[in-house]
Each structure stands twice: as structure tokens, then as C-alpha cells.
Length: 197
Image (cartoon, one colour):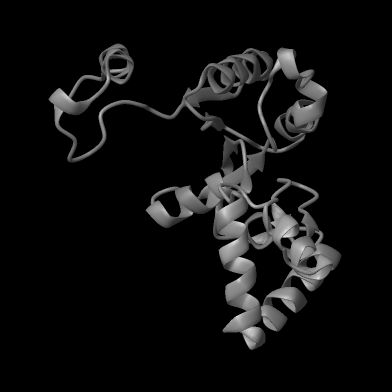
């Protein structure tokens, strides 16, 4: 129905998460019909990012520098290291405004079914950092999924012999949530992770 170039644009937009055929079609037509300057800006920005953005040599987050701004910031607490699954997790933690330590991005989680082992998510590099830097506490902030829990457990077991305190972020009832609307698994986890006041 559309020309080959428009079909290619629609197909290219479908690589984005949550974008199906109809959404991709709407986006493509909007860019071509009503937002040509925005489309040009998007294309240029995407091209520059793909060309120049890589991974931080220390924490593995996305950056155009060899060492990202967080890792090179001397005001951050270098004795705290928070392990996350993705760069998006760093953004979520930073927006909360509480944590002032440094990070390590796994770029995934352990998943033997998918053939993803410790070397695929940089655990050897993490252990090297724990051995070489003055890390006092390792905070495991992987997702509360089966894979995330297994990954946190594995990392904790590798870190404990190194004399590092290993902690896991709490999961449970959200602030402002009502108990009657919380699922049973979340409630069970909240009870098992309770702390004294």
C-alpha cells in the first residue's frame, strides 16, 4: 500500500519496544506528513548517538566518554557500588535522589535457558572491581524477577569471600499503596524482608 521507503520506515520503527504495526505506521505518517523538521532532527540525533555513544569502561553504562560522568565524579561515594541490570535502572535510582554511590551495569541477568551466563553479564569485571577498589558495600538492585533474584544471589556469593558487605534493595508494598490491592507474592516478600523500627 505504501511506497518501499515508507514501508521501510514503518518496519524500522517497529524495533522500538511496545511499538506494533499500527503504532509504527502512525509514527511514520506523522513524521512524514506533519513533522519533517522533527524527523530530520531525530534522524541526525540517532545517527550521532549510534556512532559516538558506547559503554563506560568502568560501570558499563551508556556514554560518549571512556569514563562516564558518574564514575569520574569525585563527590560520589566510591565505597558504595550499586549493581543494576540496565542503564535505565541508573536513571530511575538517580531520579529518586537518595543514592550517592557508584554503579555497575550488568546489561542483563543470568538466564541459563537463554544461554546467558556470568561472563555474558560482566561478573568477572565486577569481581575485579571489588578486588581492586576500596568497595565497602555492594548493593544488589537487580529486578525482583526469578532471574534477577538468581543473579543477585550469584553475585552475593561471589562477593562475600572478598570481605565486602552485600545488601539487597528492599521490595514490597509501595509507598502510598493499599494492602487490599497488593498481590500475594509482593505481600509475602514484604513480610519476609521486614525490619525492626
